[in-house]
Amino acid sequence: MLVILTDEQILSPKQVCQNCLLADSSGQPRWRKGQLGCGQSIHKLTENQPEQYECLMGFRIANIK
Image (cartoon, rainbow, N blue to C red):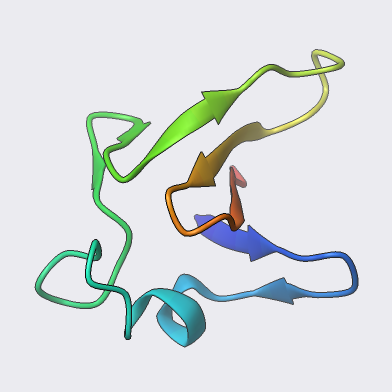
């Protein structure tokens, strides 16, 4: 499950990506084959962290399993 991380909140991508020009036709991040197509991977500090990405709009997205 993808979530948007901010300094103080965890948000659903539906709340943020719905108005993004880079989102797919359903208003979700461009997630394909385990990669975020509208952002880049962020290096993990520890093995226990979920995969994280920074979208082109500047938000941090985490893939919570």
